[in-house]
Length: 421
Ligand code: ADP
Ligand code: MG
Picture 1 (cartoon, rainbow, N blue to C red):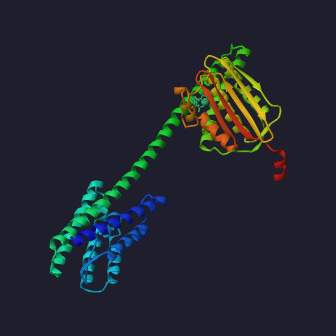
Picture 2 (cartoon, rainbow, N blue to C red):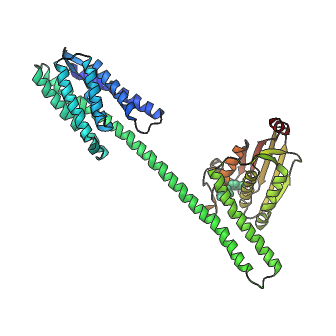
Picture 3 (cartoon, rainbow, N blue to C red):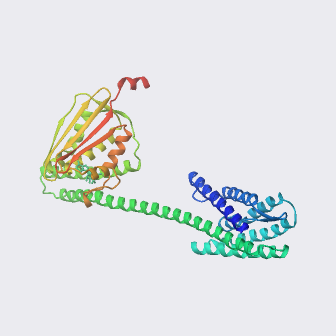
């Protein structure tokens, strides 16, 4: 069984080459092997086959070169080029009778694989594997008859076993590995597509809910204001509700815009205390509706550098979440601390709190515990804005006790700003 042992050794080397070519292709981020790269791998496989061929006679080389030619021909459609490479390589080992037999057989085989290439890809994955195996067996049989005709065979069983079983086994195994890799890529693509579709669906649902609701409410009050009998006081009240509703719709749109484009716009000095007071003023009506009292304890000094509008958006989301976490009322305390290097902003509430699992999920797109009332966009936007402003976020929370968000930003440095201009 000398030839069989030889062939098994040869096959294991071919599989090692295939393994490394797949690893390198993956590292280089090739989804499918480019033809040139595949041709190089096949040539390496052919060289290994020739170098390790079994030579019962100086003019005869028994080896597994059929495997790379079958795989390259059927799977990549480069059968004729690989066959030509094999003929050239065989030429280096002598232009003898074996060379002529080899040339005829391999050119014919290369051409037939090329001819069937497009038909081959119309088959299902399992049929492709069977097809490759059957084609290899047919070719092995032709080779065996050619051998029988050209020499007096001594160890017939060994030759027949080696030629009929091992090439078919090798082609079958390699075809299976290729199909497995292709199927994996297909699944990956499908998962990405499904995730994108889900994101679009969630976004659509969130937009229609979060924007349609305030717009419908605003429209209702606009209709009410059309009434001629309405008192000026009531009209002002309705107007302020309309304004609030429109602002809420605008906030949702703003969150989506930040979600798709998180970079900062115009960078300027942000006096933390002044800006936080503006944000609290915007949210006061909502806080009052929820019986939430907002207290402040601000350091006198303190500016940070960033996009003022995004800063507003960030703290509007944080404080709004705090208000919403207290459906039966409560209070929020906002502290700021100032040091020469850092400004800390703390938002503390006495709301429902969060478990450590919930805290871990903060900032995940569409993560919300508010059912149809939530979009799960607020915290995601908060995290991206704080990151863009070189800040950090710490969250401490206890169920039914409350939550404290601590934000730290680098202090705005006048002197370094002046030096830069
Ligand atoms: P949404 O407010 O639309 O639910 P967010 O991204 O703003 O989405 O918040 C995500 C989730 O984080 C909320 O649904 C809530 O469960 C939790 N959360 C955020 N802030 C607080 C808070 N101060 N107290 C309790 N839970 C909070
Ligand atoms: Mg929110």
